[in-house]
Image 1 (cartoon, helix red, strand yellow):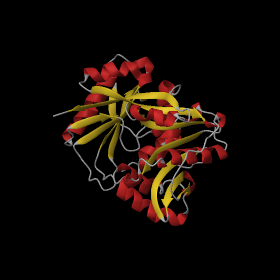
Image 2 (spheres, helix red, strand yellow):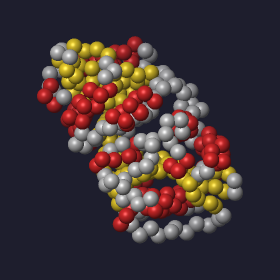
Image 3 (cartoon, one colour):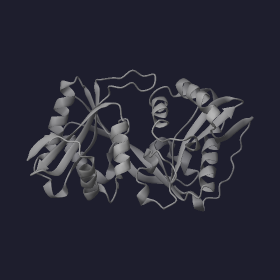
Image 4 (tube, helix red, strand yellow):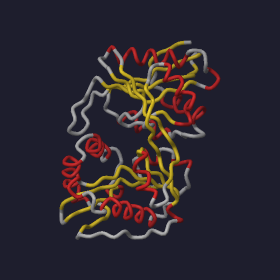
Length: 316
């Protein structure tokens, strides 16, 4: 068995779908988009049996700023690790993790997270990969709280307009809203979301994908929505082939701190779903949701679909 750095994306995606495709069907376009667009320092190590790829690990280090947040090179990530079903329990996964962790530690990393990286595929350890929990626990990863992807069928929903006081406007952003949108993100979500929006507009995200809330000319809220015409593949539509043909997605969504607790978040969610329903969206997903806000989306009959466990460990 040979272990070395690899870059054959097509072969990696083939291995992924052979082993995880039933639950997480990977599109080549998505893998290329996320891997090549991510500015963080990253590598892929492959396990090869006579030149046949039978396992890989993708690891990253936080070397690029996140909006107004400076990079923290002491944080590293395991984006994903897969060993072919026919080659498991032979120490391949252990060897891949040993090599990835060693490289991260040599580069100064002191905290390793599973998933949750920029351009992530998973926010944590997928529940479908239960056996991997034991694997990571044995490597001293702490595994605790859950995150959820929620699913709903808005074609069957009778959307009831929530009450809203105040003269606020909600709708799809226009080109002239872009500068004010970035001012809002810098002011209210100055880290990852601010950085991602600057990047996403350069790799396919369009104005039709963004719903904004305005108070006069000031943007005070936003939601990122998706349908089957979206060019940028965001987390809520990663696994769109498991949904209907008219799939959709939503996330993130946020309101300026100064305007919270006025019902604006619920109204923004309602308007976003209304827009998606007019686009004939049926089944749709809201990604990376914490347990304590599931009921917020539950008012529109969204329910847990996929679960991920937060996992991390400190290293020396």
